Image (cartoon, rainbow, N blue to C red):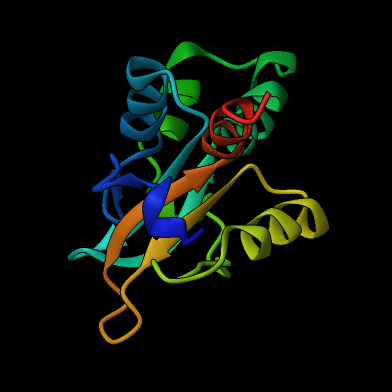
Length: 136
């Protein structure tokens, strides 16, 4: 089975120039754990709920004014995103994606067009489990 058969096509994404606040709100509103980060539709990074939690937790333990904390949320998402993103092509075999997720300990993999690098989908561990559940 190819990734294109189970990926979520045209996934929600964050633009590289968005703020941490915007990305945080998107993750919350969409109830997702991962957002690909794009620059004019080209994949440039990933941001996860874990990245944002690691960013927020130190703030909660510090004694700062609300204004200082708020200013941190106006930072660019590019400051927090993972830039060295593992991605796959739509024709990639699903077993390869599963191996990547296990080996790299990641919960989602963006899917890009090989010739252009444009984001066309995302496959998450939920997609894989949903597909596997049909066999039981």
